[in-house]
Length: 384
Image 1 (tube, one colour):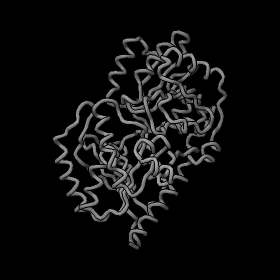
Image 2 (cartoon, rainbow, N blue to C red):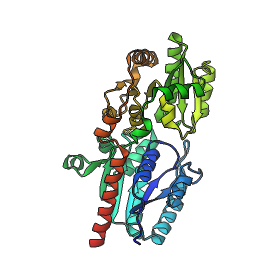
Image 3 (cartoon, rainbow, N blue to C red):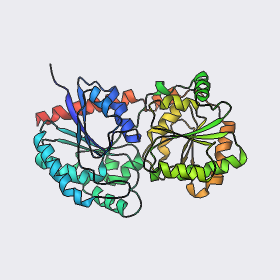
Image 4 (cartoon, one colour):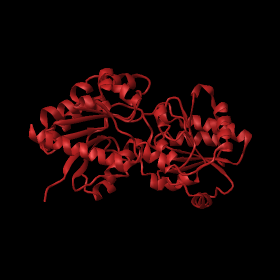
């Protein structure tokens, strides 16, 4: 029996987040007798919540030294990191295809893999549209410059994400492939009775629920969401903000909620595996991110039939259904609050399966395209 092609995904911590959710959605839908995913993780201090599922599907997990946390960058660990990478690629010549999702360290691992490994296909996959502000972002921008030289294949989740990393001529020539952040629209099919059931489960009967699913990271802008809720409750008290996810900034946001006496209007659910059900209970999805590539949760929310209000820091390609409004963050929390209440008042929710499927955001199609791509790349390298 032929063994499956093993693709090495280079990632951070494999816990629920936009990039990680996309990778897992693809992994669940590829034919694993033909293509198998393995993972080189850069955050070994955490035990990713997807790890058990990965191993149950036959995936292997390797861990590298972490170079950065929320508050610190461990430059002195760079030598350890490089040493471990050399050792890894020397000992694992079976990997001919690398799918790199960690573009901020691609300039480090790609040349090492090229020199010490047996890699013929280097995929650089851009999932964001800009770097973080400050010194960290400037370093990231410097690290991105060699990527077009080392990568053999360029992927991006949107046109804006492509422009962040890749040269303009590569985009115009079609060398950059836009890989749509697919979801399983059948999982998010809107069911009115289920929405009532889920609201009842959380004691939210007769409440309007605004939802957000994201890690508690600076770019997700949770603090602005709380500012918006402060303005909303001045007008209506029957609104609840449902925050799904976890992260380093969660305690800070919880403190802000208490300080503003919003404990009855903001609920924290942590990391959940039932996001499709939770979206049934929501009446609007809020995504005021400072910047995003093309957020998977934005696609999921639309698949669930929800209206989405997001920031102009998110690519307009996110609007698949016509139900997404883009607001400038500089307009302020009070303006956002009024727009949210207006949208909830007039919106008529219904099933959006056809929109998602017909616009190429069905994960089955995404997984099939990638599977064929990996197989084609693998066998073309054998012919060389």
